[in-house]
Image 1 (tube, rainbow, N blue to C red):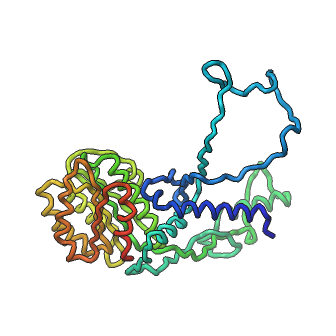
Image 2: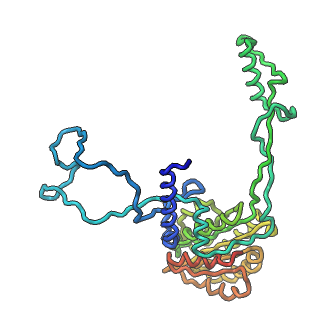
Image 3: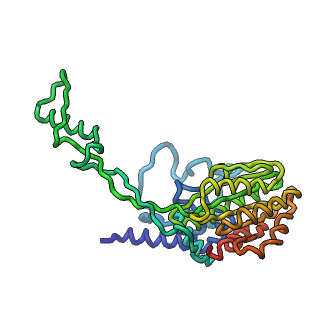
Length: 368
């Protein structure tokens, strides 16, 4: 039977989720996520929410105090500059609650808010991998699967219980009834069928604000793609004049400087695809972010690599150009010359944090 307090708790959780849903655009553009807890849960600060509180009895019913002091004396070091009591404020404070939501819940909200279509995968996207996992013990089985430790402990307990164990001559010989064997069961694992490669320009022209925009957008893109695939493999590339494959933590925290050669990122992305993700079996997504400031002679090489090596094997190749006070933005103009020839090449201009919202919808709105 459901208790009233459980119903109240459930209603309050729905209110909290409603507040998140109503303000989702703000959370997307401002990055007001306090941080990941593990890999599945995040916390979001929800302002202006009345927090449930206990209601106490009427005043004047007495109580117990400890320590020295006079009746009516304030607790602590309150007081104004003239030695009097400090005056109480007359403005309402801001109530903030940290709402914990799973990434699946956030993905559902994101898809609903941006009206994102479901992705139609290719290849072995609907397959599941079946694997035998030895996760139990049984009394019968082949000798090759005999669990020595379990068998020995069973025999030892039997000898001690029957008085047949001598500590001076500790000989333990298991019988047929003592034997225990490993047993397997079939476990269905998701087939990892989608690969995402994130590329971020970390050269000197990319300020910390621009890098934070990239990281915020990458988080929300990642949240949506994870909801669309049972298994998702991710790779991260940072580059200035030279590209490096890094782990997720480095991608979200690194700060570098230097010149810019975008072709180095493309070379690294192609290497990762050749090494890990055969295009016939994988749904491949590339998301590149830069301020568009590229070494001039490198643009020709970039166009060759992009058209010949990356775009043909990707479900989507998305380029997001973050406006920077130091970047020229020339690279976007080069991409606009070829974008009409490739349906899976998507371009987006991100002028500031407010542009993250529209950029995500531009990238993911075609459901590929």
